[in-house]
Image (tube, rainbow, N blue to C red; front, side, top):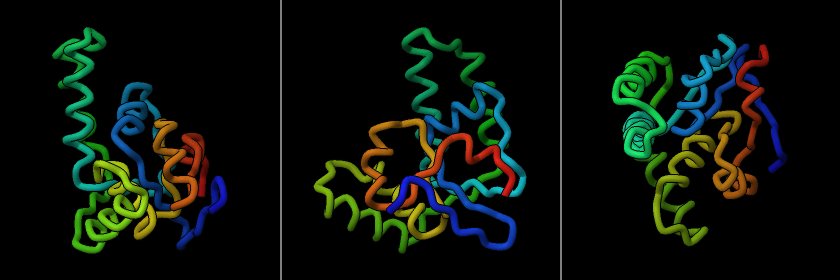
Length: 145
């Protein structure tokens, strides 16, 4: 697939984001264009909380700031998916690529089934995704549909 390709349905573009990208949006107070919808696997909030805990343990955040970020992430409007179809596709993607975990495959499965593109700041995930789903830039979240 190409670097970035978007199928528009009505005026809404759907983008899958991962936990590091979610935290980047919150940390820099970046606002997704209202014509776009964010989509992610069910586990994104737990994964983001885990990243916040790691930041606290490494002295990058205080407990207070981590919990404030967590509070804001729970208020961010996202469509969360974890149905049988997305789990099954994640399994097949992980097996096809010989991955040891399902984490990245879950994001790719949701992107393939429910979104126009994956947007991530994780370069390793971009490299895994490029032959599986369309990949957009962070900036595409802020551009009007």
